Image (cartoon, rainbow, N blue to C red; front, side):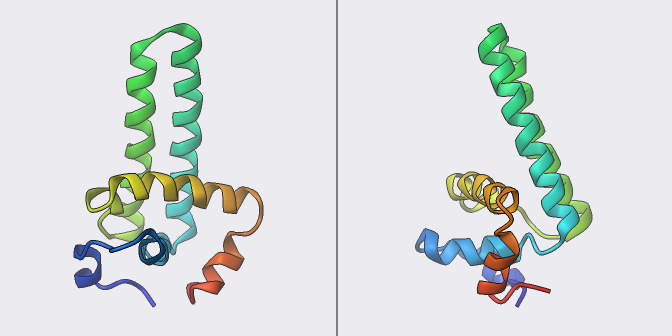
Length: 117
């Protein structure tokens, strides 16, 4: 079941409560794909910043990571990013979702929370 506008405005009391809500706000594969791309590009840019000692690569890492994710929420999913209510949990969940997808276990996790196809 998709989270309602009301449920998105309420802060989660725990990460265990937040995670299914986060997944519900990332139901559409195209939105998730933008998250994966932005997260991976952000990682590449962050490593580039460390190797080259370039502050603008570090800034670009943050901008790219958020820009692609927010575009997915604005234009594809049409919901509000969890970043605004739970910034740290949202960041952790971006990496968790990417890891589950890369390991082929995301569909199973979506099903477990009643969010599968």
